Image 1 (cartoon, helix red, strand yellow):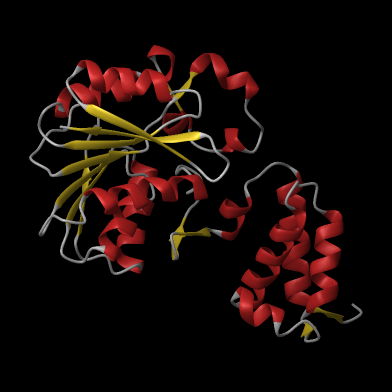
Image 2 (cartoon, rainbow, N blue to C red):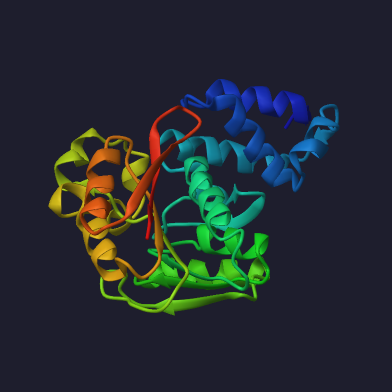
Length: 271
């Protein structure tokens, strides 16, 4: 093979990717296989790339163009300044969900040694991010499914989140005494499945879809913890009114926060 530089490889991958975020993804994959941070990558544009790295990037482009999420291919993603292992069977952490973490940290900022419960924890990105930013907090992370629970354990260990306790249980029936409950539950109605991209459908259906037109988890968790503690939910962008209504009927004062795109993303219920 003719030797190529980091810059040339990024441009090559970018031109071949069918993704809407081809430039960003090309940089991520090259940085990953070069074992470099994004900053180090920018400072190494003229460095020669080994044949092995070129082949790894070519295979990644092929898999990506077949609709496989880049995060699954690379086996990791960044969230709230931390690195999380991900793969088949666990929901990929998304930037929008960082708002749920920010909301949680604000809700517990005046509490000493707060007890926080993260339901439908998945990779643990929410629970671990809260815990790492509040070392005095006790965070319980509840996840039911085996594959996701494995990633939760791995991410607690790799991020040294010693104040997170993993619990294998059903979020719909789990109860306890907490200062705050947070959840990014399944919230897509089964009827909306045809509208989702091939890439999203690579993720576990148990983390995406639920009954009652996407409201089952909101209704059940709200009932389980009504008048016991504050609740913060991530929601679908069209669910603000419905989820607020569920909490308000149970006596909560509610607030809705928008994500960076201006869409409703987090609903808070305060008691």
